[in-house]
Image 1 (cartoon, one colour):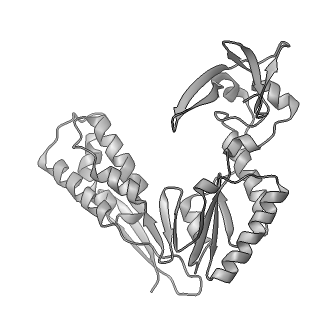
Image 2: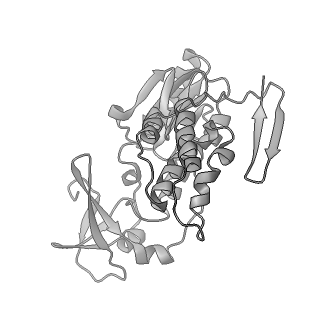
Length: 291
């Protein structure tokens, strides 16, 4: 990491020293820091990170897609000297400081997202969520022109791409836990499979885990608040865990709903819009419809 220019040795006294954390990812050891104390005082930009709903609303009529992956993400962002010394951390062979934006800082995602947005500013049809750049267009020629502009802009920013993780000129691409297709937005098959393979919960923690996966897919599940009501009932603090037929039925129904989740079409600003609302004692919902 020293040779790659990510960290450098520190010999002088520093005001902040964090602990080192080693994590294994894809068979490789990743060195991180535990900046718990630093995060308590660090100033954040509070820059918004997009949701998939915001992404989809920005690409009406798109049929051709590419996804470009920014290699090493945060580590492409250089730190100034003052910020670098704040990231000093201990190791068994002495102290080091980060020369690049490290993982773990609470401000890191916001800084990275802002820089990515600045890089793509003015390029219609290109949008990013963190290190994933989506290119979307109605036709191949339009797509190729956007792709050319993005690559030129990335080059001017010295942004490196991980070509092993890029998807170029496809009718469907995986993007931030979903599948963006020419027909619309689909649930990620991996997420659906994860829900299908989950065992029947044996305690409240199991219910929370299951509902966490289901909630991630909630946009694809009509009447969710009605169907999952028996499961949510178990999470109340004054309710003891007791798995009854009502809970089993809700569990099985939700699995089936995830398996049969619909395709959500992209919003078309040229079409008329209808809003339908509904509510009951167990939940409420609304849907925006277009023909």
